[in-house]
Structure formats: structure tokens, C-alpha cells
Length: 365
Image 1 (tube, rainbow, N blue to C red):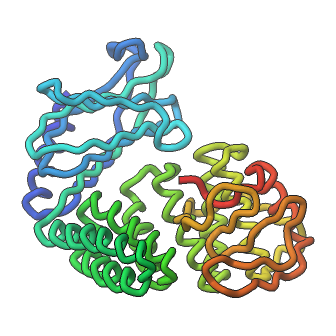
Image 2: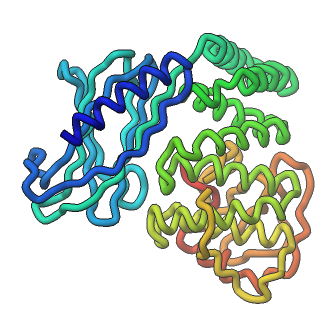
Image 3: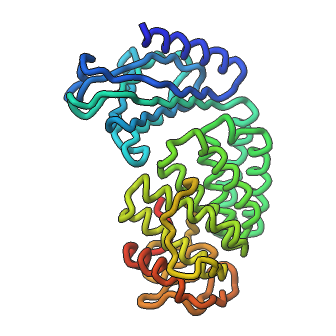
């Protein structure tokens, strides 16, 4: 009976939201009980029904402190069947699927074994394009194609002049709030503008992408980490290290909790935090930096100039040479050298991250 009530409320909310062209955002508390039937070779499960309100994308994730949830989505006609265990970071299961309006779906959450029972929280986000955002996204994608040809001819100014206004128009019509596809187009635009030296325009896009990710993606997912780290990098490149520092610290917190403190994501985040401290001359800590503190989780758009290789340059941050962190380094794409402060109080933070990365700075995609 409770599941039927959930399904009815879902259908009602989806229909009303679809009529207003607003994103569907639902957060539901469910319970996996010991007597519930198993799901395949998994443990007991619970499920709910959902009818999609519009063409677009559906994001669903499940989290629990009582168990490690397994998530599956199946369509009534059998055309769709997908599942996940931990894609959302930590033990959070996360799925993203492309759907048509009126598709009947069953969302199933199960435990890993027969003993895994308890409360789970399911989050559902539906996103669809409206006519204005669809037109603006198409214009931006066309501008990116034209800009790629101009870039190949060495006309970076022309490439920027194509992409920057098209990206600004998409942001203005609200596509970032409604359409998941706009996220990808804007991400490509932000990355391209960063490579072409248009840092302020790239920063504006990244700020919108961070807002988009908040509440639409699992809190500890790589999809949350990436735009946050990108924002940190662009702020540092603009010389705004004081603003970049909280984002870098948040990236460390997210990466440690979502992927483990010995993961490549956590090592990259610690490394970037240490470098931001060095470039910004922030010696307030008075000793070896310990970035593993609490904070709002936030990864980073990586310039094509910062490939994962020894001595690679993170956008806006100095290169790290093997065996030494500190001194002066040339920031690619800026045409200037950073004069770094005394690195000794923070060298442990940089060295630890650099060692675990194999001296490959930058936040992985």
C-alpha cells in the first residue's frame, strides 16, 4: 500500500511539474524489510513506480547508512534495464538514463545480501529541455564546431568570439536549470574558453555548472567533484587564491569521503590544495597543511595543457618537478612566472599528494 501511495504521488507530481516545465525533484524514504523478496542474487528489495513526465534524462540515486544499496531501473515494456552499485561515490548507487515522456518505470533498491535490511533514501531528478534552451544549446554546439575549425587555423580570437556569446545565451535562457544536455555543451564551452585564454567567461560557466550539480548529482559523486575542482583551478589562474582555497579544501573532503583518502581523486585534490596554498602565499596554517577537514564537497576542469605526466601544469598552478616542490614555475598559457613563497610549511601536503599521484597533478575526469 505504501508503494502504491509513493507511485501515485510520483505520477501526480511529475504531471504537474511537466506542465510547468520545471525539473522534477523527489526525495523519498523507503524501507527494505527482512521478509521482502530478493532481487535476483541480491538481498531483499523495495521498489516504487514512476511515469516520466517529458522527454529528457532521469537521474536516480539511492543512499543508506544501514546498508550498501543496489539500484536498478526497469521499464514496463522491457526496453530498459540498467543497474548500479557504487557509481555515486562511497556506497551510493546512481543511475542516469535517457527517457521518453510517459515511460512506465520500476525503480528497485536491494541490499547486497539477506541480512541487509533497513531504511534507504531514494532521490529522483527529471530534467528536460524547453524550446528556448533546446534552440540555444543547438546554437552553442554549432558554435563549438565552427570554433574548432578556427582553432585549427590558429584563430583563437575568432574561436572565442563564436563560443562565448552562444554560451552566455544558453545561460540566459535558463537551459542550465532544465536540461542535462546543456550541462555537457556548457562544459565543453568552458573547457574551450579556458584553453583560449577567456578565463572570466570560463569562470561564469563553471559557477553555473556547480549550481547545476548541487542537488542534481549525488553529493559524493565525481560529477560533483569535477566542476568544483575546475572552479578552484580557474579562480587560482585568475589570481583569486583566497576564493579558490575553500573550493580546494571542499574537493579534498569530497574525494576522501567519496573515493577514499588513498584514491587518485583524493591525491589530486590534496596536491591541488597544496599548490593553491603555495601560489596564494597562504601561510596562515603555520605548519604542515592538513586539508582533510570537513567542508562542503566540491573536481576541476582540466586544460588540455595539463595532461597526466611528470611535470605537467595544472591550469593556474605551477608545474611540479620530480624531487622538488616550490621555487618558481612558469604557468602555461599565462606567459608569466609565479614567484612562490617559502614552501616549507606546506611541503608535506604537496609531497603527499604528488607522491600518491606519481607527480601527475590535475584532477582526473
